[in-house]
Image (cartoon, rainbow, N blue to C red; front, side, top):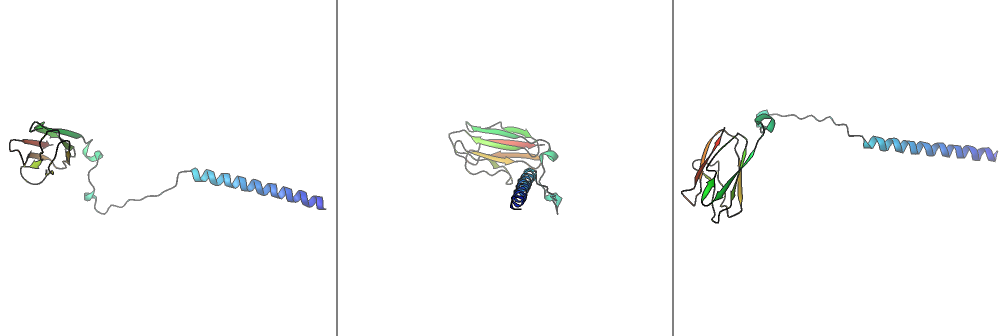
Length: 142
């Protein structure tokens, strides 16, 4: 009788061990599966969503060098949504300042400092350097 009890006990322990191992393996496999999410985005005012590359087309970044007391290029035509970066490579400090309005209004740019602006509206944007009256240029946004 004692012998049967030992066999039953050992068999039960073996079955229990297999169940635990099998259960852990199943749990581990399930944890590696990607989480199931049902994400719903509600937009109350769609007009406040900024345009994306899909709506504007692919945007570009353009570089204007400030050198030898001039903006190079002095005239640049870009697409709506494009970004322009001005890089001061000159020895003097300069600004990028709109001729009218406040679209372009950089701080004073020492050598090696940049200023950037994204143009979201179609139009012509003439600008100058506050410190040097002869430094004039314009951006045309189509």
